[in-house]
Amino acid sequence: MYLLYCGKDGSIYVGFTSDLQKRLTYHQAGKTKTTRERGPVKLIYAESYLNQTDARKREKFLKSGRGREVIKKQLVETFADIV
Figure 1: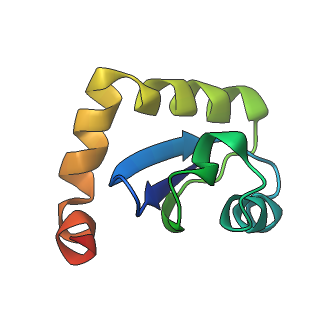
Figure 2 (figure 1 turned 180 degrees about the vertical axis):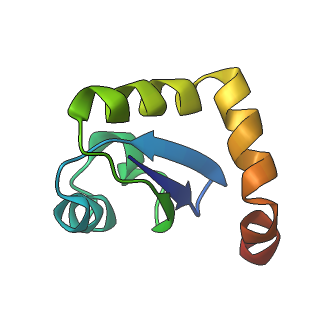
Figure 3 (figure 1 turned 30 degrees about the vertical axis):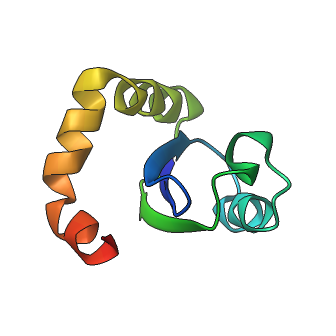
């Protein structure tokens, strides 16, 4: 599970993958439809899980309104550095 900061619009993209390095390369190369027009992207947070189901549940939570609130509070210094 990972978070990307999208430089063009300042949004946060929440994603899930089994190969973070490969997925990040795809995002940065514009090969991912959801972030292609929002780049450049920067990895700002990642969590690892042994179980795919747990990772997907966390991703779903972070995509929710409450999840986005939690992540903004948790990464307050990161967001201050980006802006």
